[in-house]
Image (cartoon, rainbow, N blue to C red):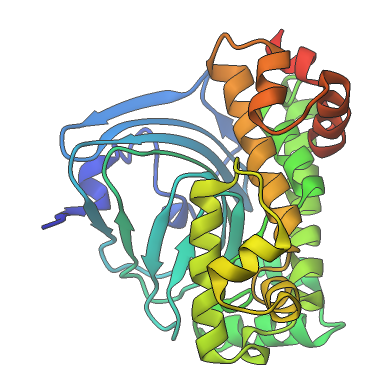
Length: 329
């Protein structure tokens, strides 16, 4: 049986307030480094956050404990649009007012406006989650996106009428360009106003890329329910086997779909081709190996499927905007 926990029991909200609870802080604040929390049932959390008058940016690393968890929020008004970039780990979330759950997996993202609190987050035991969470004041968000396309009009109407809204049904794959921006936010140089302006500008760039992806992605309704279930199962398979030598023919057998339906349906549902999704997972894994292990760049290249280090370094730099040797230093 999973352990039920209130979010307020896990976080010390005087130090690290939940992003949805930050509404128009009086001044820009940034802690002198990440805050670390330990909660017996939830595990270890490391949180680095920066708040501005109209947005809050939180980078979180979470090593869950030995029990499955169900986290839920206490009711309070929703005044922010919330964006989650799931870099690693899995989290299944149910939002009040939405008719679909959001199954967050490696290298995916979402955007939601939820006026009624009561979110429920299911988190598996013994895993490491890494995510970038951004909360944007709803008035600032509405003014920023304008009203020049169908997606923006739908978002503005939902916020004005206080109805739950998500960027699209389900989640979408994080693109290489997004990866570069997220990496630059994590490693943003400068101090004071310079750093603050850089972080805010990159967050707005991320939002721009998100909305562009939402408006270009076809809705999952274009894929019938039976095929959509097969594609979601295939995505789970890829999350576990992305280091395998995979071919389209093999994936067609795994998914029980012909190659045409597999390629078209995967792009429609997840906003990425199947092999771009695999490449993204491998690059994320390579980044973790370079940061958290003593493996050489040659060894990391071999693990992630590259025969030559030079080819790996070129692909890595194209993906993240920084070379493997720079990350290792």
